[in-house]
Length: 414
View 1: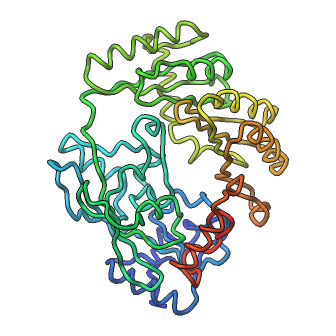
View 2 (view 1 turned 90 degrees about the vertical axis):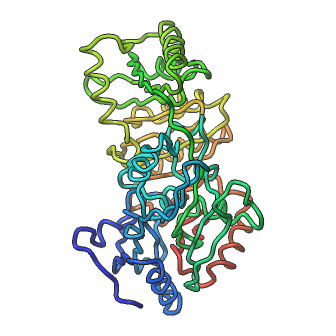
View 3 (view 1 turned 180 degrees about the vertical axis):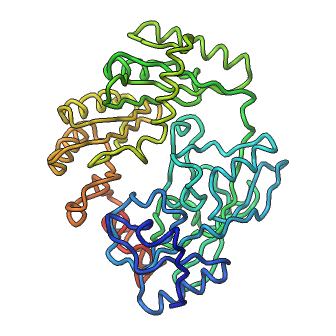
């Protein structure tokens, strides 16, 4: 294999997955160099895990083999930006924060808000299918991809889609790569649709006396109000359950949405409604500290639940109750019908079993985002296993016959 470029500041431990560190970290300076590394690894039977800056490597199974962490962070160029066409093409190593800065100069944005935007690359956004509270209003990463370039296991860069909205001919390889966790190829470039940035935005924080009150309130907020809303609850002295509602649009619409949200809040046990300076400082400071909660907060186990919107609130309430105090923090988005729970316990396997028992009653999907290293060999990160697994296996064999890319990381340990 080509000699890896190991940066002292970004050593192998930074790219460890479930405490399994790579033998080397390589950061190709060009796409041609990246393709050479991949081709050589495939020929030698070495296993590569594609990554950007390593911010979201906790997602997915521990790799069956892990020789090289291949970072795309040096590939961060703007290939083409056409503000009038509302499209942008960038290399996969560009961070979301840098992309937002670029688009903001033209009054545009990519309305995707996963945690840690300064450490999340465009390639990581797509490969891990990351999202945040804006998902319910604006959709997910796959809704914004017009074209993609990837390096295959043979070390060949290939393309799918294009750089204009109408170019949708051929197989939709772009959507196949979104959420694949780098198990099918290395994303090197993406063309994305962008949107006009809202004329004005406002963030409203509502602190409730209990999780139950907060779940009831966040589930009843008007659909025509916030562009994003989520509940963050964390067990800590003086910490209430807080609802964060993001309002966006023209000024008149934002003011009207704010009024509707506050009217709904007055029906519940609200401690803070955004009008008192002292409480505003307290709640907004705490909200800033916990905004990236699922990515950074301590917990032995982190699970994400997805259900039907009509049953999401009951699912979260019952899962929290089943954990009997072990759920030390949670984030709940009722419009996207997703919840992330942080669990601190000495019995991680038992806690997961209780969560899955509740999820089964609601036909919900469970994704384990963090777990103790002792469970790495036995845990099913995705549950239940999808019926499409045999087809997924065939796709993996067709695109990566030697299992060069992130072997064992995906559903069913593909």
